[in-house]
Structures are given as structure tokens and as C-alpha cells.
Image (cartoon, rainbow, N blue to C red; front, side):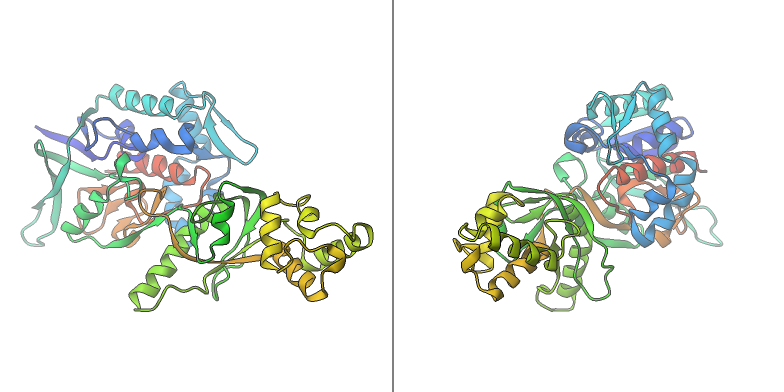
Length: 420
């Protein structure tokens, strides 16, 4: 038979498309069950959107966020929450704006989406891999290649329209193995080279690794690169055995990887000048710390600096700062002016140099994908390959942590599903 809609990929974008697309429809998913990655998001809680408006969602994607306007205006965060409420998934927003199911179970979201797709009449086939897209020519005079289906590991499927919703390349064990990029390239589409994003950062310095597991609850990071915005990204920063993680680090990782890739492509060594500044106390400047040290000198002259600092920071981090400033085990009254100057600077902004990020096995999303100029943002239809639509992470869009990427997945899946 010829389906009205063939959806390749059973993740959040694909299942949402199935809820809105023309029937008869079929979803093919290469894993044994759908939405495996969705079930793991938010630590198994599923941060499915953010309590902001359309402008707030687009801002989390940077300059490319404007591409999302049509999809988001038709299905903004409030509408997404209403959609899930109609599926008996009540949601709630945390103080930081992240929206989760009240049940705190991502599996509830997955099951509701799968059931909603089933209720529309969509057929779901798991364990089926799409191997290549089928092309035909609508008009021999123009020789316009049209996508009319796909060859799969279980036979050929024909459809009037195909939605590519295979995800990106992050966490391949959960289904996103980059196969959608290969399908797109094979029919001549431009694919921006994929890079890991929302991934932990590896540092040149070894001292962060000695603090593995320690969290700075009130911290901020920014890239210190010429031409890059100097905005601070705030939130808890976690030290790891390779460097740093936490929301600010994850949000910077895609840009860091882009800079590192550009250096590799130019035959240059990793740009160790790509630094991050670590603000342990937001708003407290070096001058404030110098004044603090002077107070300590007068009141607690015999106490060690690292003990005094442990009242401001986690003890191990305070000790690491003192070691960096060559003030290890030094009483505050015995510390020379230049040592206190160095320590004050480190307490305000502690630079670290980034050499890499976590790999695909640890990255949460993909930077790169089907180039935006290949798609009509009003419909997500492929401009040069009629019959093909793209949705979700397979598209060259990636945003910050906080439910933004899933918002795009749901909104783009709906738009691709409804478009003709």
C-alpha cells in the first residue's frame, strides 16, 4: 500500500508528527521500542518544555532561533502543556521555569505520546531501520526529484510524504546514531557537520579533576573569546574527573566544540585561549574579596586562609584556590600583598582552559544537522526534495538546557505532521 505519511524515527518529534499527520500513517523506529531517549531525559523526569514565551524559547537557540517562529507560534509552551494535559499528563513548572510531568516520570510522557499516535490510527513498527530514501521524478521536464518513500531493513515503504525525525547523533545507544544525516546526504541535502552539544567540558588544568563531585551552587561561566558575547551563564557548576559540567558548562559546550572544530579544520592546535571564567560568588568582585581579606587579617590574623575561605566555598575548592595562589596553609596575617591579590582575583574569576568536551556517548544533543536553508520554516518541507519534511534534532538547531530542545521537537513534529 501507499501511506499518506511515513515517519522515520519514533522519538518525540516523530511521535508528535504522528498525532497530527494525514492518515494512513506509519512510524518506523530502528530500536525495539520508541522514545528511548525521551524516557531518559531530565534524569528520567522529562523536562518537556519551559515556562516562557515563544521569544524566550527562540532566544535559547541564539541567532538561528528565528527559524523556529512558525512552529513555535503554532505550538508554544502553553499549548504543549495543554496538549499533554489532554493526554492525562499534568505538568508543573519548577522555580527555574523547567516544566516536568507532575508524576516526575518520563515514561508516562512516552507512553502517552505512543498511545496518542496509536489512537490516530498510525502504525508503529519497531526494529526497522530506514536504509535509504526513495526518489522519483514528478515532471520529466523539470526533473525535480521527489521523495516517495524509503527502503528499510524490512522492505520498501511508499508514501505521499515522508517526515525525517531520526534525531541527531548524541547518546547513540538510545537511538540517535546519525543515520538521519546519512539519509539526507544521500539525496543531496546539505548537512552541517554534527558536533556534540550539551556535554561536559574537559580542561587543560588538572586541578578541577581533584574536586570531582563537588558542586558550586552559585556560579557562572562565560567564554572569554574575542568576538563572543560576554554574557555570564549562571547556575550550579559540577567538577568532574575531566573538568566541569553543570548547566552553564553544558550550555557553552556546543560553541566550544564549534571553535575547536574550526581550529582543527584550519590545521591549528586546540585553542587553549578558549577560556572560561568561573565566578564562585556572583557579583563579588576582586576588590570585594580584597576588602574581605583585610577584615580577616584584622579579626582572624592567625587563621589559615583556606579555613576562612571554606566558609565561602566548599572546603576542597577553597583549598584548591589557595594552592593556585601559592597560599596553601598560609595564615591570613602572613600572606603577602601579591598573594592576596592573586587569591582575590581567583575568588572573583577563576580562569580554566577548555581542550575538549565529552563525546557522543555523553552529549545530550547534537549541534549541526540538515541545514536550515534546505527547509521552508513555514512548513519544514525540503525546498529541493518535494515530499520530504524534517523535524526535531535532525535539523541544525540546538538550544540550552531547560526543556528548550524538547519544545522544538514537539513544535516541529506538529508542524511537519500538519503540513502538506
